[in-house]
Image 1 (cartoon, one colour):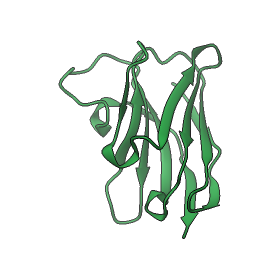
Image 2: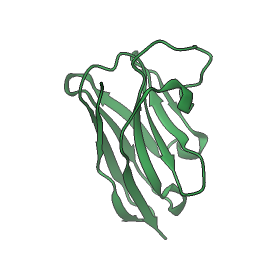
Image 3: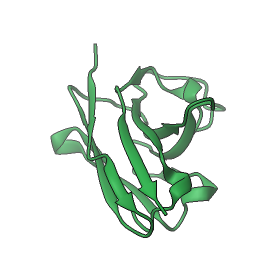
Image 4: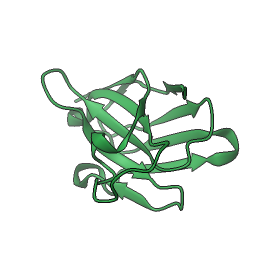
Length: 125
């Protein structure tokens, strides 16, 4: 059973930066991603990184967010710059530990079988 623990959330003014971290209790093997959710809306993919280092970003965060990982530490990061009020959400870390249909996009919830508890990001205008 893999455990994912996020940290790094907080409150920041628009234009500011935050860096989220997600520590996995073991080896993931496939893809890891960051998702976000606001009350009343579905969880949406923000960024993903494959085990070969390939990254994928939602259009809304391209050029502002950077996903990275430290495999030696089993840690996933999300550097968020130039934050906007619309980035306010609960941010979740997700891990894919088994093979799945390759047609499922990296930013789809369906790709992942483990989730963290989330860390809140609040951006004020």
